[in-house]
Image (cartoon, rainbow, N blue to C red; front, side, top):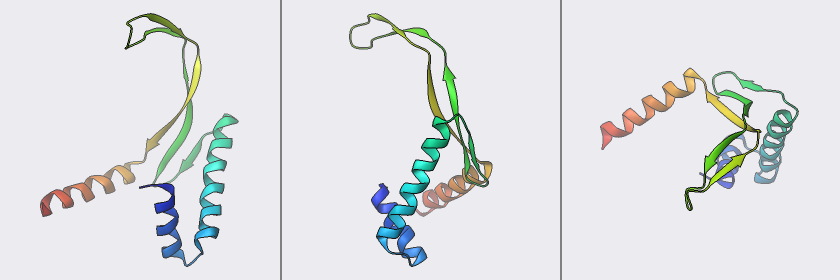
Amino acid sequence: MTKADIVEKVAAGTGLTKLETEAIIEGFLNTVIQSLRNGNGIEIRGFGSYRVKKKNARYARNPRTGEKVFVDEHYVPVFKFSKDFKSAVDRGMKELNKEN
């Protein structure tokens, strides 16, 4: 599913125009990015939480050449799904597998 698909589904479910819905979704995504850039986490109950994780400097290998390379310390965004989210996906997938 793409962002355009999400915009279409949300617009159909809310009665908002696609343009309005796209602006809301863009605003949400930009807010998440800006919050993480500022070092703040985000928690959405029943959905999950976003946070930033520090990765220490290390040596790695280039998989193509096998050459050892140094990777600087860096930060990565991580997302942890809520238990409710995981349960809903599990139930949905089990129902799909029963039908097939």
